[in-house]
Image (cartoon, rainbow, N blue to C red):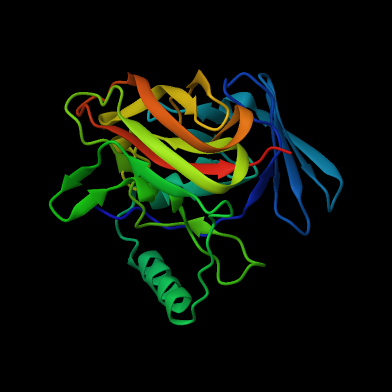
Length: 282
């Protein structure tokens, strides 16, 4: 499996949860001097806070591609892959760089950064809820294990808590290990403090191998069994690459998620989930 390109891009604040492409999407580039992007069904408006000017682009420049990744053609006519993270940030990956295999300098930077993090013990956990993961089955292929614990670690940790996190190029999803599409296979999530929502990245997400998303199967419907509140209900996921923030009916510390329906893969029936992290919507 090839590593996909690690590109350190600007981070954006994303303030409007979206499930359908025609809905209004708002996100803001940068931290110190932000630019606000407002995407409607008709146009893209970009407001620069520093110059207090607004530019408009055609709505067709932001679209859901056949690969199920969101694409954005910027003002310089460079096509980028947009990854919305935690519904509060987004990273843009230049399509030219993602598809270019001669990216050793970027990969070397990523390896150096990871080494610095490890040697200086700068890793800090994203598991604010003390989450523990298990699953009814897990796929193992030679030396690669697609275990439930993979759901908890999705980003390369920043050098310090004042920095931003970045994509982990070595990340692997959880993949069920049963025959067929994994119907009724489950993920069990238990935490030390209550959570009220889940941030989920559906499918096998690899920006350097975007074909893996459609080749493998994705979850369409989870049956949620809330053990604390004795509730059962369904949640539906979009077939698109972004962090989907799913609000639960009640805060809980103990749930089981059963696969009830899937988007079938073009090549394999293995059903994958790249990330499933407990969060709070206060």
